[in-house]
Length: 464
Image (cartoon, rainbow, N blue to C red; front, side, top):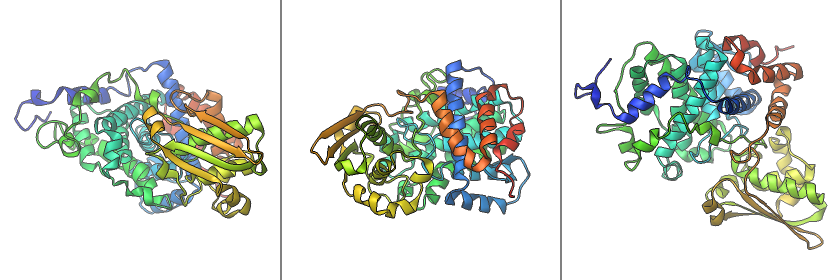
């Protein structure tokens, strides 16, 4: 084992020691049943995002690029016929997973854990011929580590300074999951974390990417790729700094000197950050979810149609309103999605991703009557909330306050709801029968001896 620069292995900080030992044991230490069930939700949800994203423009670009890179046939990219190296599969899979806004989120840590952690873990598990139980445990480790790193950095303040909490948290989480599946010893996990810190990057200008390609790479592709790079390099014998979180300089002193090392590991392996992650009921941007819940509720109770509505006033958190205000992409534009839901009397993946619908006269007419306001009060209240007020053509004022969006940690979706969402995303690419079989396989993933045997179900139908 390498020692610290001082020549004394005891100089390794307690936080680093605890974190490296946690990652090393991550794929073999049992987890509570409820945590395992939650992990299945997020595994299935992210696989569905990868498969549905494989046919969207960012996914298609990623697959075309990865298919020309060569490499050993170690892992597949779900939703495609591509089998390539685990590194390339993780990169392409990560981009597919965030090819739009279908994937999960972790609001307190302000990142999308699934699109980085799951593609890296899947590729690594297939490469290593890991069991389904090992995969699930590694995913839990990834969510735990990724969220804690982002929280220690002060996630929202870190993002507002221009850094990308989404890529930094995602990278550390994906590296932890990949490292756990690689079977790294604690000393190797310390090097893993040092290599991860060296690759931690991202500028939040990706928010200005109208095509969602750079955003998909930064949040999913780059993070998953770098994670598998890191885990396999250390697995191959490459060594590094024993404690990137302590000494001078170190990761936290560089990014946020006020970061708390103690909070990084307090309750580690007990609080289970995956339990605070959110799954989207609607396949659109996270800040739109609560507003859609409110609109759907009012439509259901009052049987509202577009002809009944004079004006719609929507309030969401003031630190998220700009993310969804009048955006070019249909699945992020709050005003468009509210109008589309009313016009169609519902919302599905196809309609929310249809650019042509943004130019549809009836949708445009109602969109012009949707007013969005950022609310300081909702931000201070915490969570993902929305206040929606509809003024009807008969001067009735109807209000709905969504305090806990469906799919959020405090209002989770049922197994049946997650299943329905995911099978609906899988079926257009895989076919209805294979979509059903894949979902059933994931629900029983902890009984699977070798993740690689699931490859046929993950791949797209053959041409013709």
